[in-house]
Length: 335
Image 1: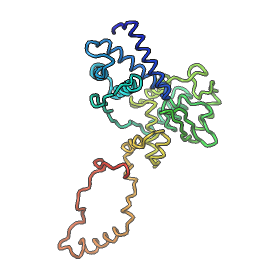
Image 2: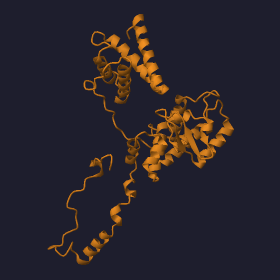
Image 3: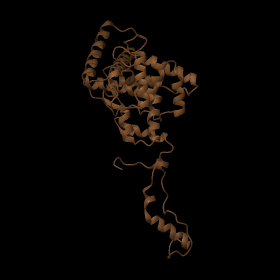
């Protein structure tokens, strides 16, 4: 990596500070701010290294940087999307320059369905937690559908005993919400609080009492339990969130309720879980089954062996057109 001139570093840090101030005023999450500022610094350094081809002040510099990230550093399109978002905000709100979307199309995120495990496998994961604290934490993730960061930020007073709910503050998008607590999970939390006596107001302490349990430490506890239980390698804390939504859907819970519990902004995000529920369409009661006319038609066919008095031959009762498959129909938003 090239050594930057002191003057160049000073200019870069000035821009970084301006960008940080703007992100703070717009109430961006701390994790997002750190990621965006890191992207800005990395792009700046890249442009200094490639100054004969691009400069940071020109729009093609960003294009060169994103292509370098994807082609040379082999990062995913999802990561490139994050870089794209950060640099677009910087150009528009700090440099006050036009962002030419036509010349730099946003890379499309690769779509993939969430991976889940069965309730029996979830139970196996919980049983193989190294400590009682780990088992309670895994149970909480599965029974509430919380994101890992949301669970680690929980405070003791967020457990609403009277209403059997869990208050989630500063969720994704800095939004607050409530999610449900099962009677079994509530009993576990009561016993855990009496036994562990967490300090500093936090529900889950790290190795030092009063300090928050780190995301790395929490994920590592799941990795240990996963290996011990011999479960698939894709199982992480977020897998339990996917399992929560999928198993609720399989139990007959409607999508809107699941959307509210998950904290999804858009219903289409929640609708992904329909594809994981193989029995979803089998549970649907077709309205045509309740129409009396069908019974009369069937009785008529069975008694006469024809489709009607005007039929010259015994023809089977068929539809006059091919029915498209469910996956080929693009429904309008108002359908």
